[in-house]
Image (cartoon, rainbow, N blue to C red; front, side):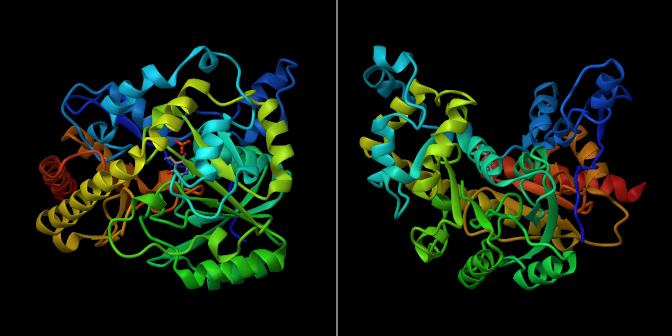
Length: 436
Ligand code: PMP
């Protein structure tokens, strides 16, 4: 069994002009802290050992401290100009009243709950009694793990995966089983084999089925069906994390787990407004079996009482005004053009030195360095940053630090001209490393 607890990537970053360390792409160090407290007689919890920081998040502060121009392929954030700032500003005045500034209902503001149930957020087949509003998608993942994971439980994750999500499972004491993906998503035969080899049954199967973070690939309809069958056979829950599903710019939508198996208690869906509207609002929701709702609400009450009320009112106003549809149309066009630009630039400047996935939506390409493996993604990161381009090295997207030869490139943030500049800088960095 290949289970893992920690991301082992290490990447100190030095100033391009000298050898001064300007920061690190590593997550905050946590190892050994608990032991240090124990020596002083302080009772830090055993589960504190499961806390793993995020390289993706640490890249934000690292890049903020850099003075030279950097092409931003690192964060999975909407382009600043793709956030409808003016519309939200105009709405804010009308959407906010005295009631917006006091505690709200733990399950979410009635208006936003109803808007989601009525389909204004463009998700199909839900109803108000299945929905609880959360503080972003991350809180949805946390709630799912809180409800389903006991220390030592087996949790399936895709390899590579969104490591903030796998870190949530680790924080509840999960053991991870990392299952490879191909262009059709998680390889189900491999899942069956690895589970059999482990001699255990998983509790939770964590999948990002549409335009996966970090690879951009989509789980095929046939594999979705097989995953549902396996979840039933194992008595497991599919943790269906889908922040990007509304961002399809090529081809037809595939049926989601909830459509394939309506009302299925084995499906726990996590949604967010972060990628389709604005991540800073920190509003998302979970869509799960209605019998779980009291537990979800109690967990929220013990965690944050309620989700940010003004932001829920703002989003409610935006949805009911029909803003989301128009906004999504623009986003999809923008991201299609940017994906095309990235693929074109990769072909022009890196040619057969790399291979990229070709996503049909979302924000990410997964780019693998071909060749003899002499250059690692971490080395490339450091040199590339000096030359003014940033991405996330593959090992940061694997709980066990695999994919030393891969790069996550987010094409959503920069326009096509800047994307080309970024890829040229990447190619120059690779040239430099290969000439050493
Ligand atoms: N899941 C995935 C797959 C994501 O990519 C993200 C954001 N990067 C999240 C969850 C978290 O979303 P939020 O910012 O709404 O917490």
